[in-house]
Image 1: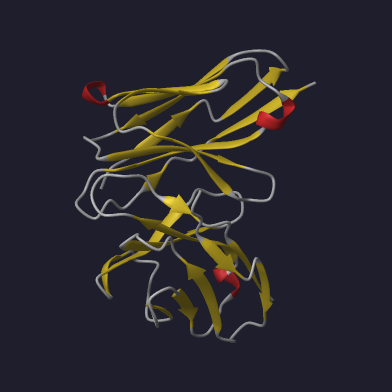
Image 2 (image 1 turned 180 degrees about the horizontal axis):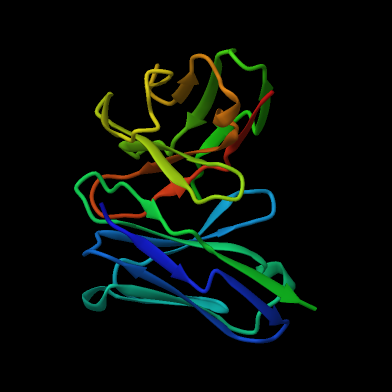
Amino acid sequence: GIQVEQSPPDLILQEGANSTLRCNFSDSVNNLQWFHQNPWGQLINLFYIPSGTKQNGRLSATTVATERYSLLYISSSQTTDSGVYFCAASGGSNYKLTFGKGTLLTVNP
Amino acid sequence: EPEVTQTPSHQVTQMGQEVILRCVPISNHLYFYWYRQILGQKVEFLVSFYNNEISEKSEIFDDQFSVERPDGSNFTLKIRSTKLEDSAMYFCASRRQGNGGYTFGSGTRLTVV
């Protein structure tokens, strides 16, 4: 099945800084999503982005499907951005999602 | 925005007991899934369900697990005889036909003691 790798595993920022999280995947995808897991464990969908670029406020994402990677950009980070960010992708007819191990983001005041 | 609803949010059960985790997917979605996340680990696929039958299951989804869509709105995961290692967050998700992202529920945190 598809392999998903995320980097970096951990990231510590000062409030106001920008960051880029990366997701590499091993095969062509029909679905790619970015999630934020909040302190209560909920998975919050950030982007559905199997290709192209999307923006939502301070967050944006780009997937370059031909080169098999996706990037999540967080600008002007806030302490509430802290948590684990997961990339998940699927490549088969069942659309079964494979998750990466996540990036633990800590934003300090 | 439509939501996937999961109940209960937390459940503590004795080892060996049966548990049923409940989910109400988004009404016009046709594909249903269960995933789980052991504390501190990544989210893992358990099972997918379409047209009233299992379409794929992982090696985790052994004979102790079953899924059911008993009516037009609910989707349940049953664990027949819980083990300590079943302690995890269980997520239900649904997806509409064709291309489109998943919507995940808020999860059920299951603790087996």
